[in-house]
Length: 162
Image (cartoon, rainbow, N blue to C red; front, side, top):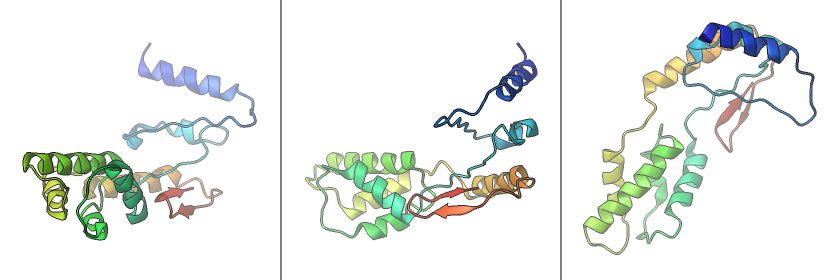
């Protein structure tokens, strides 16, 4: 079956589905330019969520999750969090893991601020500023006909909903 046939079949099956209380269908893509506009018409996928990299509060929560149980020296994580702007949750996890490895290789007992700074220099963020700009443009294009949708911002998680 070709991608076009598959898409046509899926759209037809979506049209036949009745509303079911408590059931939400979610789809995700890193290639928003490939979304057929037919998917975004009323009764199908009616909301578009742009999920940016985590804000400072979310980065702190992710950092704390991945450093739980890790012996840390006494330093302010606020300085580290500034260096993680634009990093995804997986990127932050990689930084924490790399900092721990740097500490172990140096035969130190506690992970220091300098270990994290070195790790940030080694781990590249997955999302570039150019990608963020591109996704924001795609969001605008995909939602241009969705004037009935209210935009809100969930600051605790950095997720903007439409």
